Amino acid sequence: MDPMQFLDILDDALTEAELSELCRRFGVAFAAFPGATKRDRTREFLGYVRRQGRMAGLAEATVALRPDLNTAVAQLYVGKEQELAWLDQIAGGEGRPLDSGLTWRWPGATPAPASPAPELDPPLPVAPTNPYSPGARVTDAAMFFGRAVEREQIRRLLADGAHVAIIGGRGFGGSSLLQRAAEEIDATGGQLAATIDMKDPAHHTAPALLNAIWSQWWRRVKPENPVPVYTLAEFVTAVRKLNAAGYRPLLFLDEFEQLVWRKTTFDDPLLDAWHELGREGLLGLALTGHTSPADLLAQQGFATRFYELFRQLDLGLLDEPAARDVLTVPLQRAGLAIPEGAVEHLLAQAGPHPFFLQLAGLYLFDSVAQSTYARAEVTRRFEAAAEPFWLEMWESLSPLAQAHYPLGGARPGDGIGGRQQRILVNKGLLLAGETDLRPFSEGFARWLRRMQAAMAAAAEATASQAAQAML
Image (cartoon, rainbow, N blue to C red):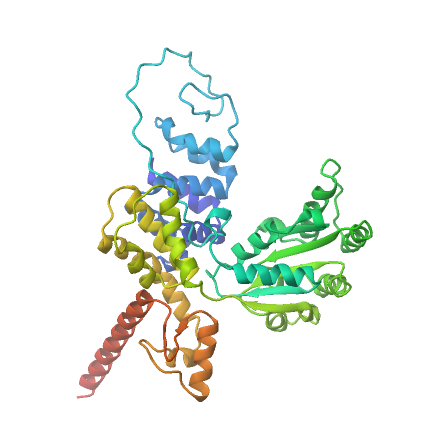
């Protein structure tokens, strides 16, 4: 593969949002790479992936994100067609398989006559597929751990005709929880679930969004007879008719911010219509966001009272058994032996935070599957990948919250400091013991100490230089 050709594809064909999504799948932040332009940062990202030895994984992730690029990516593998088997899984296995089992074909190519297959040595054992996907929605039910209490709350609220807003920071698993809750809806009881990811550009116009919601419901009723819905009036009428026929439609809306930020596209009348349907019990609503619906709508100047529908479900850290399962169960399912002390060590480094557990699990699984496990190396790789996200998390806090963040075990404060610490506990950034508060993970606390020490040293050096300049 020619890395410069791959760089051209990534830079020319992908937007910054798409590159950010690719980076998240590799446990890094696109914005954290140095460079004055998108191409500069893309080059740095590509170099990072090459150093990790994961170029084939990047090619696969690129085609999974943008299937229209499969031909361009395939051209990078001229002469190495055996490495392209993964393209068939993404493309749906189009074409007649070759003797090798590879079905990818170059445009306009004529297959060569089959030759007798030589006797081959027994195939080498194939390493288990790494099931972790840091930063991406968990779509495999086998990789979803914990949240039993939250899932039951969502089920009960929707069954009672209420509506729920799942509020949590990035990486806490709100999208995964929403999808799992939607999948658990029992269609036999007349409930129809539609799940919408508002990060998907296909949903960024009102007609496309309304039809995408309606199509999911209608496929459950009459899959052989699609009937499109494009206007708000048609959508409202369709919802009322579904209810008249004995169905209750449910909308699971992921990343509510993405809708609110597009006020010129999704305006007050749309949300007012949903509010009315929800208030009448004709439409059940569950959404995810990083801020409450009331605050989001107020920040963007909406007049709708849509927010009044929702009961807020705050999403925090995982409980200890679920956090442990994230690291142990995938290894056990793959038949891999867990190194002594590895799980306890990484639990301390990542804390019970869903995203950082996925990140730790990614590197632990790789090293164990490849029989290269070394605690120091797994820790180094985890910290290198986690640091941009720790920095983003820290910088998202207000100066007041930063000032009252305890680096070690500390008793809860009073007044303003105590209030800030309680907010941090609710956000999952502090762990509350019986008598003390501490950072959610040892890894984050150690990184924060290093960062603050470096900042203090830089400030001292600057002050010293200024003092000498005055002499």
